[in-house]
Image (cartoon, rainbow, N blue to C red; front, side, top):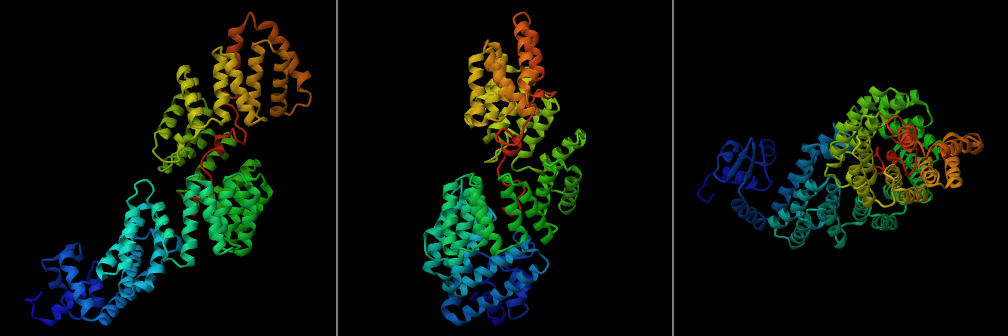
Length: 575
């Protein structure tokens, strides 16, 4: 620029070195005269569809000249840019709900630039807020968090500030962690002084949430407890710790935290979370009350509405459930869990085609986790459509999602049962072996393998598998029936009678099942089994689990795939 003699052009060129990039709006806010067309034609300006930026080699000395020539003018110029971007950000917020701001590209850009210019104007004063904003960026995922870390490196280099450059180096270094960039950034933020108390608290809440989602329960609990030391009445920390307690099976502690959260902040969100915890604890009436409170406070709260529909479905109030679900889908037609819950209601009403349609929609919407693809496969299996069930479960298990179906046992078990229905017994057994290797405490896998081993004549192994299934869930009738069948085949008649009696009592509620049904049945089979073993085996196979497709009737509890997916199915918008 030393050959440029026009003072207005020189001033405009220097002014436009300050923003990271500029367009005509930014030019109008800061440039002293009409030189925008000339600026865009300069050799060191890159112009992409009206968004311009200086080449770094040219911009750096321009910044240094202005900073050293007049620190006061430097600060005033950045204060003006800070205020400009703040005004645009707040104007944008007028048309955006709080929950949608981070998804809005224009809002994110204004906020990013506002923070950059605050750091350039007064780095020591702006640093704590910028670090806290980095925590918020971490909530938006790796890409947003990585970009935010570059802000410190850029500002540190532009103003040659040692503290900012140090933060830039440690945060950009942490962001290079390909497996867990956000966690690494949060670790760096919490490992060094700089954030104020509010920032530290929020960082621990966010990191605790990430640990919870990764099933790192002890680490999550430590972070949330540390957050509550900083502020014992912080509702977000109380809610997150309640989720952790519930995930660890400590529903009493979870409810205590949620009671306190509601005392601190009695809004729709805290009520719906306490309702969720009450559901996990088996307190359906209390859960329904919480969901009612949540919807009285916020009728458009979709999670509360779908959660209440789930309670209605369990109680057999299908019409009430469908009314809530229709309302939830009117609010958000793409709410995956609402489609899945509607499918379950329609299944209860035996409206099979509609149930399949709704679960297929849920599966198509759930392109990230593929859990609902697994539920779709399960529904197809319930209807005896084994080939389709196998195809859909294979799609679900192929998903790369970190906490998806392939990392849990029951989808593999359901796949095995589809193979069994297609007569591919060796593949079915191999798949069940894999299911057990994924989770050696899953009762469904052991019960299914027990039935297949029985059918293959491996009776001792079958009995051991039924024992394992019952040791985990001693009130599930299906493995009692399986073990009773094995004992019938091995001549342990009294033991078989005891198992069948238990199965009939649990499943049908018959008071004297032993004398009314079981003893006569066992005596009849005892007489005919030696001469008709193949026919009786085929008949038992057809009736396995009391379902036309041969799938066991899954009751709520450990043996139910419907409860085996990751926690908090409807909380994706806020959890």
